[in-house]
Length: 253
Image (cartoon, rainbow, N blue to C red; front, top):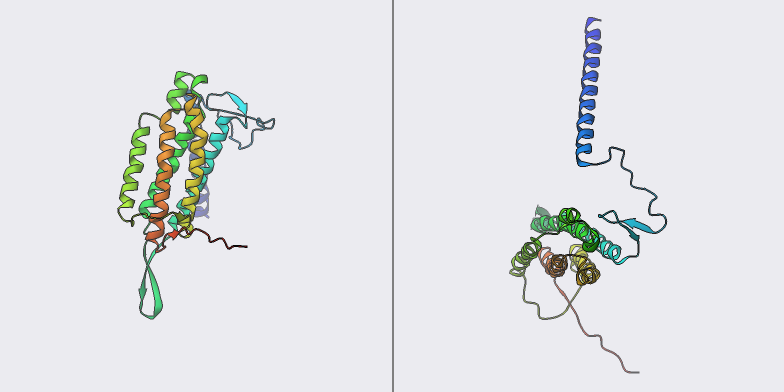
């Protein structure tokens, strides 16, 4: 009986302690939110503010959803999703070794390095989106600093080039056009490459009109090269060969 009362008393003490911790945590969060000028209201995915066909940019400007900026943002978002699919397929890859009796044993993921690179690319694409969503002619200096793709745009492209060169060293020279393929990973990377080209085409007019940093277009241009080489690299690592283009023979009537 005594032990039961003691247990209930300890439970009440723990409950009060957890409640106190929760209150302290909430107070800290509210203080930080006030300092950062953030809303402490519960975040909801739906806002209904775009029901009439407009949406808000990072500089708080509202534009029609078919505006050129949102076209570029949509392509960039789609590209990030495609890279995510390719990354998920790459995570599932395993190198296998044959054993007597036709048994196969998993060794390791031969695309572990590629998985890490694709994760870094996805994060960088968020930076691309921030820069695109902050038109330079309609944003304050503070907003531009916050969303800047940065002077490291060139270094980001340089990083992609280093990754390309490292993968290229393992690949046979390319002497023919190849068909998009190479298993799920390779095909997904080829798909991402094609979407990347579209994202670049959507960003180029914004750069030409000085609404977006030139480094963003440079990065997307180099990224499409990276995705092409990554597709070949991934296919070779998992034992797939390049599917070579062959001109179709047209039969005479």
